[in-house]
Length: 208
Image (tube, rainbow, N blue to C red; front, side):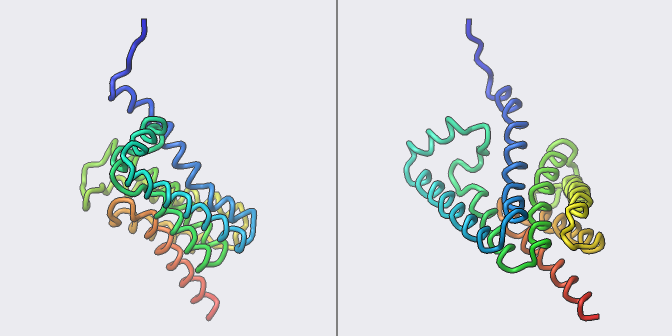
């Protein structure tokens, strides 16, 4: 006798897998940059962008391919991405520009803030979110801030030449931007705005 799970039961099982996938995937790019050079990271990120952009472009233009992808990868793809570009091209674009524009430590920190803060905002917002702000929740924003602060403490141990003050400002900026950024665009706006603010603070400190 075979038992078929309901869609609700399948979603409950898929959520932890999807969350883990997005966390590990989100931390992959800053990890690559941490262990390699700026040039190598830009090349790798560029290749990733081309791959994921083409994958989204093709599946959106070929419904049969789209259905197959959602059938076999439903544990890691969100339903709302079925008929639109996924968050991957936005995220990789944000990673590429962060590496290109910011110091290494700042780029890594901004991408880690995105990976951990975005997941925390989603989990906390869905469970405890009550105060709504443009489709998101204040509680989710606070969850994002806490996650960013925790990852900031971890980053201090990695000797990225960043002070706790800069990381604190970056974490706060990332959480605010995540709260007000629409849809999947936070994959692009969070690392760029948090990285920019940290870079400005670092530059002002050097001028003193």
